[in-house]
Image 1 (spheres, protein in one colour):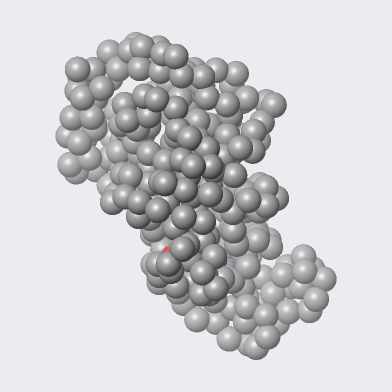
Image 2: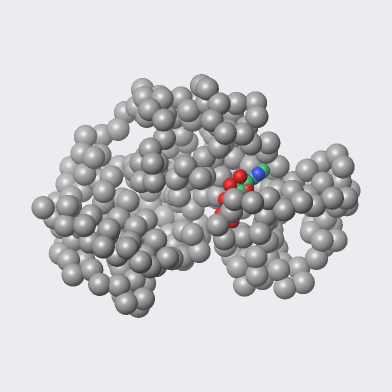
Amino acid sequence: MWTAIAQHISAKTGTAFAIQDRRSVGGGCINQAYQITDGDRRFFLKLNQASQVAMFEAEALGLQDMYDSQTIRVPKPICWGTADGSAYIVMEWLDLSRGGSGAWDRMGTALAAMHQVTSEQGFGWRQNNTIGDTPQPNPWTDSWLDFYREHRLRHQFRLAGRRGGHFPRQHELLMALPDLLAGHDPAPALVHGDLWSGNAAVTQDGEPVILDPATYFGDREVDLAMTELFGRFPSDFYQAYNAAYPLDSGYATRKTLYNLYHIINHFNLFGGSYESQANRMIDQLLR
Ligand code: ADP
């Protein structure tokens, strides 16, 4: 497997690469992660079962779209595939550190720039991907209301139902979406899709980076909402984002609507109290 991966890196980068050293990297949720090096060049590698290769393909294509936007730093994807029963993705290695003064306002400005990348095909993406390891469908859709209702909320509710989740007001909520989104007409924006603090970092040079995306074209507010879900980003981030690309009024209500998607997904991934948290959010939205 290691030789096959090294050969793939050699072919993709046009320079021979042979793994001299590999060390495992902690902190991931789903995959085994490694730094691999030939003593000179270093790459970041994630491994999973071969059946998960589509997840890595979608991650690589998402990183490539964000990389091509030249707006915010993401690791450049190198290659992905399967070898000896494992799926792999290889990307640029970044020396990451915690915090870094000035990085959060630059993160806000850079994310605002990425959110101005739009799509003529509407909302969705060129392929389905995953959120955590839950399937995330992205069929091209003209209307954000239709996209969010069908391919985000109803999709997660359906999966949750199969898992025994009980959301008594889910249909009421889906019917209320036209009211909840009334007057809001977002442009399709290139979004990260899973922007909690664990997927935001800073290089040792102080450059903000975003990692591990669930990319699609959606309402840019989905990313802002998620930055507030599990502990907010520092306030410099929001000030800089708003200065570059002010948020529309009504964001505070939509934030709960957009984070509901992630909370139902957390129920689907982890079960437990996320069900009651989702029901409280639904009650709040229907008040
Ligand atoms: P998972 O898909 O398993 O959740 P992540 O993509 O979140 O894994 O990566 C796990 C950890 O590895 C991150 O929290 C980060 O610290 C580190 N990491 C991610 N990408 C890189 C990279 N390109 N270079 C160096 N370290 C990275």
